[in-house]
Length: 97
Image 1: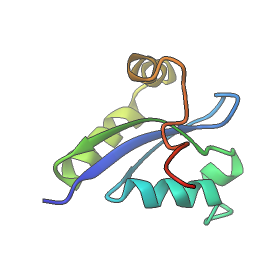
Image 2: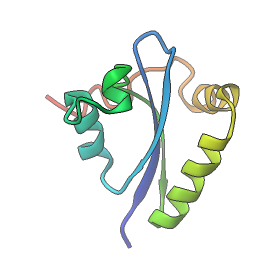
Image 3: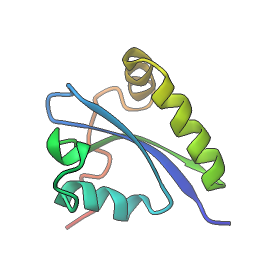
């Protein structure tokens, strides 16, 4: 069974949050950091810091959680991030050398 992920990115000032879903977290975060899609939301708002992610057993479950998070308000997303990553560190900072 292929794993899937829901993730939240932010910019260095934590002013913008982006919720995404993927089946390859490391590759997708690498694409965000490299601004592979220069006209994308994350490139435009410099969202490159991975501050939250959750793993799922199926893409369907991940997509359902992504929709739930996107349907929530900003404070709910912030509370979720703080519950698992209170210092808002970039969880992917050591993934690429």
